[in-house]
Image 1: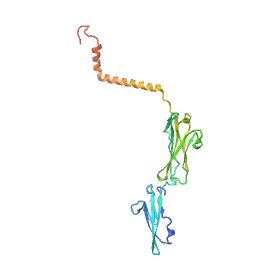
Image 2: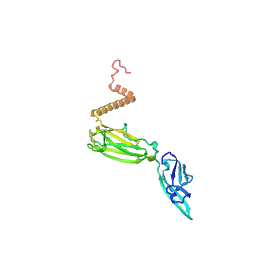
Image 3: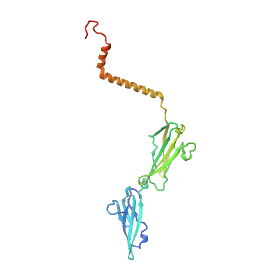
Image 4: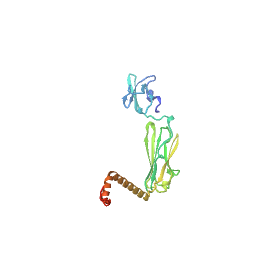
Length: 259
């Protein structure tokens, strides 16, 4: 059933062909083995039809209809069980949405390090539509690349209202400098269109030794200045008295008086 559609019927199948013509059976509807009466909003039993006033994803599940009738003095009952799945309406289906990679994520690696690139795509439900996801390396489909060693793993996960999320991870155990200069692009396609996103891969710049030494030296100098400033701020009077007591001149030399 299509999500958010109004007045959709779930019909009890293959019942009337077993009953005499013109006979109206008594029908009871069950949801997950619970009789549907008044505590099932938006779903109204109406004979062989269960009418959905509006279809919501919460209404997915197993429905059972039990049709009872009497013929030639004997009672008969027919039971049919159906599973309802709620999917996106065709007019709301869109082209694939690439979640990863994005321009905000940059893969900085050194030669010899491990590289793992994630291509994650979300598809809305679209009946009879292909859901294709692939990596292109330097403009070539990954299946056609022979001069580059890598692995690709694929996982799929269901999304609400019939959607699908597909993830392809491209892994390189030990990248070379040449590999880090390649172009890695994620592609996705369905009947609504094709989209792409490039993974930004760069060579990690080396950290220069003199830069670290300069930063450490500057930090030590600033710390020393701060410590000396604090000491002077709290102990300046003691420092003055200490200096006068040990290094000051004798003020009694001139006139014999000491002030």
